[in-house]
Image (cartoon, rainbow, N blue to C red; front, top):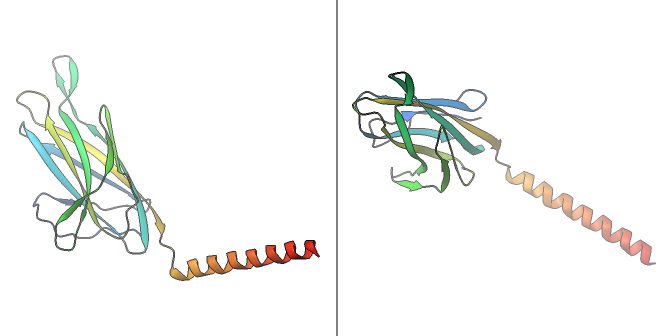
Length: 171
């Protein structure tokens, strides 16, 4: 089962994501002052699972004159693994910006502590900005070593049966 717990981090503004039974968590930020920001979100993959995270986000809009304009721009979302010594290992991933931001790491995540950084800035002069998103963590159980042993034994039985059939046809 997927779990999210309290994770140690050097950043005071890190938010720990809590996932529902379907593997979904929400995140977001409101920045009242104009400027550039780096927001950190943390999560955990439990030892009995492998996980494939996939996220999306949308930026808030503000009414300016007669138009609703985006008040925040997300320039990147990058995943990392949080190591036992609190250092970080950056993970390769994909990010697409635009009206809806989509992001995910390139590889499956094994048991451990992870996070992602949202880099962005306000886009309207003199105003703050906001964004909101969701992260889905599709998980599958990690096969037990006995499962691999049964697979190898089953393949061996199939090979032996095929060999006997082939040998019987040659006689």
